[in-house]
Image (cartoon, rainbow, N blue to C red; front, top):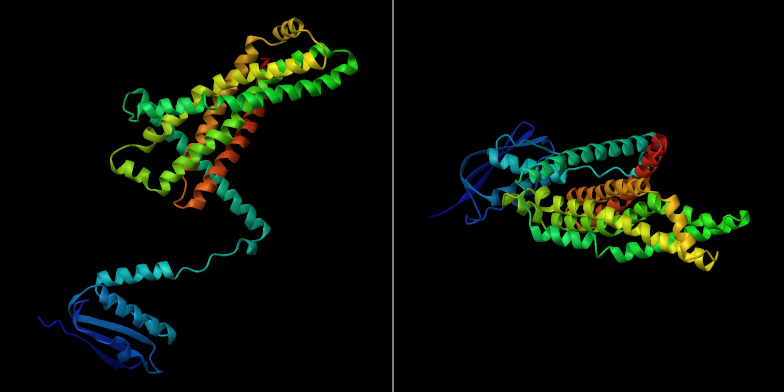
Length: 373
């Protein structure tokens, strides 16, 4: 079968009519479009098309039309697409939409008020996103408690091990040094008043109520929260989360719930371990620098630290665990599909976690002091 094509050119006042005839396909005969229209009359203000004579077309027609539009652009001639098949019009408009975007405006061109407004809108969007993600998490836990959530049990066990025993060495080391430092600073001041024994009170209260849960949370934000964001962000880049949705799995049930559950449950235990190891670090200073006997240090600590102090720290630790897991998971799930976006999501998860931890700790400290706990 002879698949011939032809292009006829006719002039109507200040417009140029291009009539396409025959088979405009890759397998068709060659028809040099550029030679036919490379010289556009100076009076031409527009080009339109007549495609009623086309018997078949494919991507070849799109290539020829793109060449025509480029020539028209160089001569500042307007191109009317209404005479083309509807499918061709949509494809050409789509390509023009993607290639005809104006260059992004530089941030340096914005004024101070525009910068404030821009960051305010970004903060508002982030707040809305966090609120929406919180609602999705509550729904996921509702499915979990109703027995409808699907995830791997071995993944949950793995996260428990990662958030607990694997994190204990670094939490213990930092807590010991924090208790050591608190006792040393306190000893320098308390020696001036002959109240060396009260170093035990200082270290015990500071570790159980504040520093123990906070330092554990900060360490877990940099260690586990960042890992959650990087893992989920990499899954976004590799389209693994899309694959889970295609197979009928809810990503929150399968990926987020095991991570959040493991960290929320393990954080109180890490905080309690941090409390005792921090008190042990203070004991070393009391024994080596102030010559306080182990019995005296123990008795003074028992008198000053009560169960409610531990409960305050455990309450904070549970909330801190939720914050770290929440920030790590939401930043990972919202990560864009590039390697740079994974790094940004990881950094944002750590920074957001630490800011929220400090803010929440200050709010809870004020509240507990207000109610006398």
